[in-house]
Length: 230
Image (tube, rainbow, N blue to C red; front, side, top):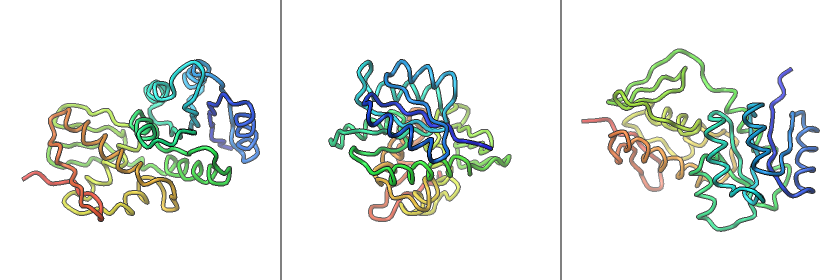
């Protein structure tokens, strides 16, 4: 039977132990790392399905570690755990590759619900051999690869899902609620700022490959639209 592997990265003894025990009790396979070095070793050797990352580690900055973990585990869901309340730090962590965040103290019931939502979305990714082309953008949905003309665009998992959702309805308004339901989960109750950060990252990455920075249009109070080239 498949048991999702969750890597917990937390230097606080009480929190780390509680998380590892709770995850095991919920049927997950859990490993617990107390330093960034240990976390990188686990990620390289075992390919976790999901990572819980505390930003306040003793040996490496949490945001820097998030970037390194994302480069190793491109398809892994990363959820940041932070006691920091400044909005800027949360945005930096999301921009570094995290898919979601929880601010300490948090309820275990909320954490477990978030994990289940993320893992459901990962397991439900379509595997059909299908290509999607909108102007200079080409998406291979089976291989999960994106190109602008002949240049491949490196995207994180949620960025790819978001782009596929928008491009699949090019020229139409996709509401914020629809995007969150499609890319995250229909029962999602996490921060909606996650969506805005991922859209901003998509715009920057597409622009680096010669696509217009206005290709994804914001419709305030409604959602976003992937514009069709004229």
